[in-house]
Image (cartoon, rainbow, N blue to C red):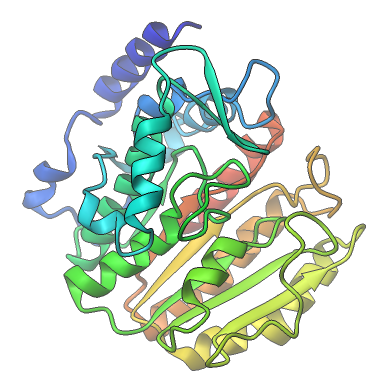
Length: 341
Protein backbone atom coordinates (compact mmCIF):
# COMPACT_ATOMS: atom_id res chain seq x y z
CA UNK A 1 0.00 0.00 0.00
CA UNK A 2 1.30 3.49 -0.78
CA UNK A 3 1.75 6.12 1.89
CA UNK A 4 -1.27 7.95 0.49
CA UNK A 5 -3.22 4.70 0.66
CA UNK A 6 -2.12 4.14 4.25
CA UNK A 7 -3.33 7.58 5.25
CA UNK A 8 -6.64 7.16 3.44
CA UNK A 9 -7.23 3.75 5.00
CA UNK A 10 -6.40 5.13 8.42
CA UNK A 11 -8.85 8.00 7.92
CA UNK A 12 -11.63 5.63 6.85
CA UNK A 13 -11.04 3.40 9.87
CA UNK A 14 -10.95 6.40 12.16
CA UNK A 15 -14.26 7.64 10.84
CA UNK A 16 -15.89 4.24 11.26
CA UNK A 17 -14.59 3.89 14.81
CA UNK A 18 -15.35 7.44 15.80
CA UNK A 19 -11.67 8.21 15.97
CA UNK A 20 -12.01 11.56 14.30
CA UNK A 21 -12.41 13.12 17.73
CA UNK A 22 -9.02 14.55 18.66
CA UNK A 23 -7.64 14.85 22.16
CA UNK A 24 -8.91 18.42 22.23
CA UNK A 25 -12.41 17.02 21.95
CA UNK A 26 -11.93 14.96 25.10
CA UNK A 27 -13.03 18.06 27.01
CA UNK A 28 -16.36 16.27 27.28
CA UNK A 29 -14.42 13.97 29.65
CA UNK A 30 -14.83 10.37 28.75
CA UNK A 31 -15.60 7.94 31.53
CA UNK A 32 -12.49 7.05 33.47
CA UNK A 33 -13.24 3.36 32.92
CA UNK A 34 -12.18 3.77 29.29
CA UNK A 35 -8.84 3.06 27.64
CA UNK A 36 -7.37 5.58 25.22
CA UNK A 37 -5.67 4.54 21.97
CA UNK A 38 -3.36 7.16 20.46
CA UNK A 39 -1.93 6.75 16.96
CA UNK A 40 -1.38 8.67 13.71
CA UNK A 41 -0.96 7.75 10.02
CA UNK A 42 2.44 9.51 9.98
CA UNK A 43 3.80 6.49 11.84
CA UNK A 44 3.03 4.33 8.79
CA UNK A 45 5.16 6.51 6.50
CA UNK A 46 8.41 6.22 8.48
CA UNK A 47 10.69 3.63 6.91
CA UNK A 48 14.28 2.54 7.52
CA UNK A 49 14.57 0.54 4.31
CA UNK A 50 12.37 -1.92 2.39
CA UNK A 51 13.73 -5.01 4.16
CA UNK A 52 14.24 -3.54 7.63
CA UNK A 53 12.56 -5.34 10.54
CA UNK A 54 11.27 -2.05 12.01
CA UNK A 55 8.79 -1.56 9.21
CA UNK A 56 5.30 -0.07 8.80
CA UNK A 57 3.63 -3.50 8.68
CA UNK A 58 4.23 -3.75 12.42
CA UNK A 59 1.78 -0.92 13.05
CA UNK A 60 -0.60 -1.97 10.29
CA UNK A 61 -0.99 -5.36 11.99
CA UNK A 62 -1.73 -3.70 15.33
CA UNK A 63 -4.30 -1.29 13.90
CA UNK A 64 -6.06 -4.08 12.01
CA UNK A 65 -6.30 -6.12 15.17
CA UNK A 66 -7.66 -3.21 17.18
CA UNK A 67 -10.50 -2.77 14.69
CA UNK A 68 -12.11 -5.92 16.11
CA UNK A 69 -15.44 -5.35 17.81
CA UNK A 70 -14.06 -6.21 21.23
CA UNK A 71 -11.98 -3.02 21.03
CA UNK A 72 -14.92 -0.82 20.04
CA UNK A 73 -14.87 0.75 23.50
CA UNK A 74 -11.46 2.33 22.99
CA UNK A 75 -11.32 6.11 22.95
CA UNK A 76 -9.34 6.94 19.81
CA UNK A 77 -7.25 10.04 19.20
CA UNK A 78 -4.49 11.21 16.90
CA UNK A 79 -0.99 11.89 18.16
CA UNK A 80 0.04 15.55 18.00
CA UNK A 81 3.53 16.86 17.34
CA UNK A 82 5.65 17.05 20.49
CA UNK A 83 6.54 20.64 21.43
CA UNK A 84 10.21 21.51 21.62
CA UNK A 85 10.04 22.43 25.30
CA UNK A 86 8.86 18.91 26.16
CA UNK A 87 11.60 17.27 24.09
CA UNK A 88 14.27 19.45 25.70
CA UNK A 89 13.49 18.03 29.12
CA UNK A 90 14.86 14.67 27.93
CA UNK A 91 17.22 15.65 25.10
CA UNK A 92 19.85 18.25 24.34
CA UNK A 93 19.21 21.05 21.88
CA UNK A 94 22.04 19.60 19.76
CA UNK A 95 20.14 16.31 19.50
CA UNK A 96 16.97 18.04 18.33
CA UNK A 97 18.86 20.16 15.81
CA UNK A 98 20.73 17.17 14.41
CA UNK A 99 17.53 15.23 13.77
CA UNK A 100 15.82 18.21 12.17
CA UNK A 101 18.80 18.90 9.90
CA UNK A 102 19.30 15.23 9.01
CA UNK A 103 15.76 14.68 7.73
CA UNK A 104 16.00 13.91 3.98
CA UNK A 105 13.52 15.19 1.43
CA UNK A 106 13.44 11.75 -0.18
CA UNK A 107 15.09 8.32 -0.07
CA UNK A 108 17.07 7.47 3.08
CA UNK A 109 19.88 8.89 5.18
CA UNK A 110 21.82 6.88 7.77
CA UNK A 111 22.58 8.89 10.92
CA UNK A 112 23.97 6.03 12.97
CA UNK A 113 24.89 2.35 12.65
CA UNK A 114 21.30 1.26 13.33
CA UNK A 115 19.31 4.46 12.71
CA UNK A 116 18.01 5.48 9.28
CA UNK A 117 15.65 8.32 8.33
CA UNK A 118 13.39 8.81 5.35
CA UNK A 119 11.37 11.90 4.47
CA UNK A 120 8.61 10.97 6.91
CA UNK A 121 10.76 9.95 9.89
CA UNK A 122 11.09 13.30 11.62
CA UNK A 123 7.34 13.90 11.74
CA UNK A 124 6.70 10.33 12.86
CA UNK A 125 9.25 10.65 15.68
CA UNK A 126 7.78 13.98 16.78
CA UNK A 127 4.30 12.44 16.83
CA UNK A 128 5.49 9.32 18.68
CA UNK A 129 6.78 11.58 21.46
CA UNK A 130 3.71 13.82 21.10
CA UNK A 131 1.41 10.84 21.43
CA UNK A 132 3.11 9.89 24.68
CA UNK A 133 2.62 13.44 25.96
CA UNK A 134 -1.03 13.50 24.90
CA UNK A 135 -1.66 10.18 26.63
CA UNK A 136 -0.13 11.50 29.85
CA UNK A 137 -2.34 14.58 29.65
CA UNK A 138 -5.49 12.51 29.19
CA UNK A 139 -4.67 10.11 32.02
CA UNK A 140 -3.60 12.78 34.49
CA UNK A 141 -6.75 14.80 33.74
CA UNK A 142 -8.94 11.75 34.31
CA UNK A 143 -10.20 11.61 30.74
CA UNK A 144 -9.35 7.89 30.50
CA UNK A 145 -8.20 5.28 33.00
CA UNK A 146 -5.15 4.24 30.96
CA UNK A 147 -3.72 4.54 27.45
CA UNK A 148 -1.86 2.66 24.73
CA UNK A 149 0.20 4.70 22.27
CA UNK A 150 0.51 2.75 19.02
CA UNK A 151 3.25 4.74 17.34
CA UNK A 152 6.62 4.21 15.76
CA UNK A 153 9.55 4.78 15.75
CA UNK A 154 10.15 3.34 19.23
CA UNK A 155 12.11 5.23 21.86
CA UNK A 156 13.67 3.46 24.84
CA UNK A 157 17.20 3.23 23.40
CA UNK A 158 17.53 6.93 22.52
CA UNK A 159 19.85 8.72 24.94
CA UNK A 160 19.95 12.40 25.75
CA UNK A 161 22.29 13.08 22.84
CA UNK A 162 22.16 10.04 20.55
CA UNK A 163 19.58 8.34 18.30
CA UNK A 164 20.28 4.62 18.56
CA UNK A 165 18.61 1.23 18.24
CA UNK A 166 15.86 2.33 15.79
CA UNK A 167 14.99 5.12 18.29
CA UNK A 168 15.07 8.90 17.75
CA UNK A 169 13.36 10.50 20.77
CA UNK A 170 13.04 8.72 24.10
CA UNK A 171 9.25 8.68 24.27
CA UNK A 172 9.07 7.24 27.79
CA UNK A 173 11.48 9.83 29.18
CA UNK A 174 9.65 12.66 27.43
CA UNK A 175 6.34 11.39 28.84
CA UNK A 176 7.67 11.03 32.38
CA UNK A 177 9.25 14.47 32.47
CA UNK A 178 6.11 16.01 30.99
CA UNK A 179 4.02 14.36 33.72
CA UNK A 180 6.27 16.00 36.29
CA UNK A 181 6.37 19.45 34.68
CA UNK A 182 2.76 19.75 33.53
CA UNK A 183 0.88 17.72 36.14
CA UNK A 184 3.05 17.73 39.25
CA UNK A 185 3.62 13.97 39.26
CA UNK A 186 6.39 13.65 41.81
CA UNK A 187 7.14 9.94 41.46
CA UNK A 188 6.99 8.12 38.14
CA UNK A 189 7.74 4.46 37.41
CA UNK A 190 8.76 3.08 34.01
CA UNK A 191 8.32 -0.68 33.54
CA UNK A 192 10.06 -2.10 30.47
CA UNK A 193 9.45 -5.67 29.23
CA UNK A 194 11.11 -5.32 25.81
CA UNK A 195 13.63 -8.09 25.04
CA UNK A 196 16.29 -5.36 24.77
CA UNK A 197 17.35 -3.26 27.74
CA UNK A 198 16.26 0.38 27.60
CA UNK A 199 19.71 1.89 27.93
CA UNK A 200 18.43 5.36 27.03
CA UNK A 201 15.81 5.42 29.77
CA UNK A 202 18.38 4.17 32.27
CA UNK A 203 20.90 6.82 31.25
CA UNK A 204 18.46 9.72 31.36
CA UNK A 205 17.15 8.79 34.83
CA UNK A 206 20.34 7.34 36.36
CA UNK A 207 20.62 10.21 38.87
CA UNK A 208 16.91 10.94 39.35
CA UNK A 209 15.64 9.73 42.74
CA UNK A 210 12.01 10.21 41.75
CA UNK A 211 11.87 8.02 38.64
CA UNK A 212 12.00 4.23 39.00
CA UNK A 213 13.15 2.33 35.93
CA UNK A 214 12.48 -1.43 36.13
CA UNK A 215 13.36 -3.72 33.23
CA UNK A 216 13.22 -7.37 32.27
CA UNK A 217 15.30 -8.15 29.19
CA UNK A 218 17.54 -10.76 27.64
CA UNK A 219 21.23 -10.57 28.53
CA UNK A 220 23.67 -10.75 26.88
CA UNK A 221 21.99 -8.97 23.99
CA UNK A 222 21.99 -5.55 22.35
CA UNK A 223 22.72 -2.92 23.66
CA UNK A 224 24.84 -4.68 26.29
CA UNK A 225 23.53 -2.82 29.36
CA UNK A 226 21.10 -3.93 32.06
CA UNK A 227 23.12 -5.92 34.58
CA UNK A 228 21.69 -6.43 38.06
CA UNK A 229 24.57 -4.35 39.43
CA UNK A 230 23.39 -1.27 37.48
CA UNK A 231 21.22 0.35 40.14
CA UNK A 232 21.55 4.10 39.54
CA UNK A 233 22.75 6.87 41.82
CA UNK A 234 19.74 6.47 44.13
CA UNK A 235 18.96 2.75 43.77
CA UNK A 236 16.05 3.54 41.46
CA UNK A 237 17.24 1.36 38.57
CA UNK A 238 16.01 -2.25 38.83
CA UNK A 239 17.29 -4.69 36.23
CA UNK A 240 16.08 -8.28 36.07
CA UNK A 241 17.97 -9.85 33.17
CA UNK A 242 16.87 -13.14 31.64
CA UNK A 243 18.95 -15.52 29.53
CA UNK A 244 18.35 -16.88 26.06
CA UNK A 245 15.72 -19.63 26.16
CA UNK A 246 13.90 -18.32 29.23
CA UNK A 247 10.13 -18.42 28.98
CA UNK A 248 7.04 -17.49 30.92
CA UNK A 249 8.07 -19.19 34.17
CA UNK A 250 11.37 -17.33 34.39
CA UNK A 251 9.71 -14.07 33.31
CA UNK A 252 7.09 -14.34 36.05
CA UNK A 253 9.75 -15.17 38.63
CA UNK A 254 11.75 -12.08 37.66
CA UNK A 255 8.64 -9.96 37.97
CA UNK A 256 7.62 -11.45 41.32
CA UNK A 257 11.06 -11.37 42.91
CA UNK A 258 12.51 -8.09 41.61
CA UNK A 259 10.18 -5.85 39.62
CA UNK A 260 6.74 -5.88 41.24
CA UNK A 261 7.84 -5.51 44.90
CA UNK A 262 10.02 -2.52 44.02
CA UNK A 263 7.25 -0.97 41.93
CA UNK A 264 4.75 -1.36 44.76
CA UNK A 265 7.13 0.05 47.37
CA UNK A 266 7.98 3.01 45.16
CA UNK A 267 4.29 4.06 45.18
CA UNK A 268 4.33 6.04 41.93
CA UNK A 269 1.89 8.72 40.81
CA UNK A 270 2.00 7.34 37.25
CA UNK A 271 3.27 4.13 35.63
CA UNK A 272 4.64 4.10 32.09
CA UNK A 273 5.11 0.85 30.16
CA UNK A 274 7.89 0.49 27.61
CA UNK A 275 5.80 -2.17 25.89
CA UNK A 276 8.14 -4.15 23.68
CA UNK A 277 6.83 -7.47 22.41
CA UNK A 278 10.06 -8.82 20.94
CA UNK A 279 10.50 -11.20 23.86
CA UNK A 280 7.95 -13.34 22.01
CA UNK A 281 8.88 -16.91 21.18
CA UNK A 282 9.11 -16.29 17.42
CA UNK A 283 10.59 -12.80 17.32
CA UNK A 284 13.62 -12.57 14.99
CA UNK A 285 15.62 -10.21 17.22
CA UNK A 286 15.45 -12.02 20.56
CA UNK A 287 15.89 -15.38 22.18
CA UNK A 288 13.25 -15.43 24.92
CA UNK A 289 10.17 -17.64 24.72
CA UNK A 290 7.22 -15.54 25.88
CA UNK A 291 3.72 -15.84 24.44
CA UNK A 292 0.77 -13.44 24.32
CA UNK A 293 -0.54 -14.61 27.70
CA UNK A 294 2.71 -13.57 29.36
CA UNK A 295 2.21 -10.00 28.16
CA UNK A 296 -1.34 -10.05 29.46
CA UNK A 297 -0.07 -11.37 32.79
CA UNK A 298 2.51 -8.62 33.35
CA UNK A 299 -0.09 -6.02 32.37
CA UNK A 300 -2.59 -7.31 34.93
CA UNK A 301 0.01 -7.47 37.71
CA UNK A 302 1.11 -3.89 37.08
CA UNK A 303 -2.53 -2.79 36.88
CA UNK A 304 -3.13 -4.22 40.36
CA UNK A 305 -0.33 -2.07 41.75
CA UNK A 306 -1.51 0.95 39.76
CA UNK A 307 -5.00 0.57 41.23
CA UNK A 308 -3.57 0.71 44.76
CA UNK A 309 -0.90 3.33 44.26
CA UNK A 310 -1.86 5.77 41.50
CA UNK A 311 -5.58 5.53 40.75
CA UNK A 312 -4.88 3.07 37.93
CA UNK A 313 -2.90 5.59 35.89
CA UNK A 314 -0.91 3.74 33.19
CA UNK A 315 0.47 4.99 29.87
CA UNK A 316 1.78 2.21 27.62
CA UNK A 317 4.14 3.03 24.75
CA UNK A 318 4.86 0.64 21.89
CA UNK A 319 8.52 -0.35 21.63
CA UNK A 320 9.75 -3.53 19.88
CA UNK A 321 8.12 -6.59 18.35
CA UNK A 322 9.16 -7.48 14.82
CA UNK A 323 7.00 -10.38 13.62
CA UNK A 324 3.67 -8.73 12.75
CA UNK A 325 1.42 -11.75 13.32
CA UNK A 326 2.83 -12.31 16.81
CA UNK A 327 2.88 -8.59 17.53
CA UNK A 328 -0.84 -8.48 16.69
CA UNK A 329 -1.66 -11.22 19.20
CA UNK A 330 0.63 -9.83 21.88
CA UNK A 331 -0.68 -6.27 21.62
CA UNK A 332 -4.31 -7.36 21.70
CA UNK A 333 -3.60 -9.36 24.86
CA UNK A 334 -1.95 -6.29 26.41
CA UNK A 335 -4.64 -3.81 25.35
CA UNK A 336 -7.40 -6.23 26.26
CA UNK A 337 -5.98 -6.40 29.78
CA UNK A 338 -5.80 -2.58 29.97
CA UNK A 339 -9.48 -2.44 28.95
CA UNK A 340 -10.46 -5.12 31.43
CA UNK A 341 -11.64 -7.28 28.53
